[in-house]
Length: 356
Ligand SMILES: [Zn+2]
Image (tube, rainbow, N blue to C red):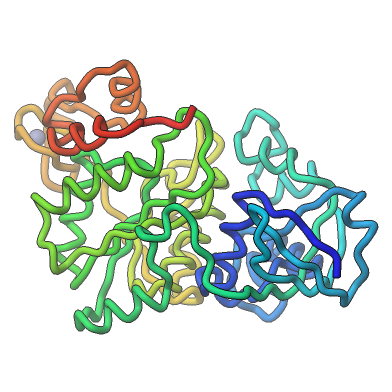
């Protein structure tokens, strides 16, 4: 049997395929599945799926493979499982990038990463020898584990909060809004492969643990890492995020303005609109909150539904910008308390902050 060495990112993808995060997938996508997803937002069987999940390899490696043969999957010198090769294919990356990301511009970070994938893709069913373990496993729950927890807690509604950064005060405001309307909250930061300048996984986890332990009703919140990578594919990726959280047993998900977007490639409400369109077919409801901001007159985080100062006294409004908070932290400064809790800042400073 032939062997294939997996990258860290591919290892995480095998984990998500086999633990049910990417249900109904049971393997990497075949050519037929790949095109069905990028052309129609569905798998050939009609199930909604928006992001292609493929296994890329060099032409040299692919030339050794035959359809219907099994290939061993190795990571870090360990045999972790195998794939039954059902499909070997390549694609016109420029054309496909346009469909997936809405642009073929190589300045777009998702497009750029897609262009860097190897030239051949293989698809087929994946099986593993045993549950995959990695350095964030102790912080990561599987879909069956979260479903079990939600059932034990008798939550009939669970809202998911997607993020990739440590929490600032506007995040806290959104999460607490959700706690007013739903039985439970799953805080589910994506902590898979990161790019330079991103927060390291432990900054995000430490920041959240500090916030939750002091300021949240502990019996109503579950924090779990999710080791997938960000694709910056805007609306398509927002739909993918919703699908994953459905698989984890959530009944609702908060989709933000320009969710999973980057720079100005997508319209502000495109992600919310696309998710809303598919919410019934997907089986998870979309929560859209008006964007929170800090108002110096109200002296609190608030939004348009609760405060008129945004029109009567616009100078009193301060945007809560994750980018600005990140830039303060990276200069060794402490963001002000009305934007980020002191405990969160201290927790972030307790370990290395950024991917180098
Ligand atoms: Zn106000």
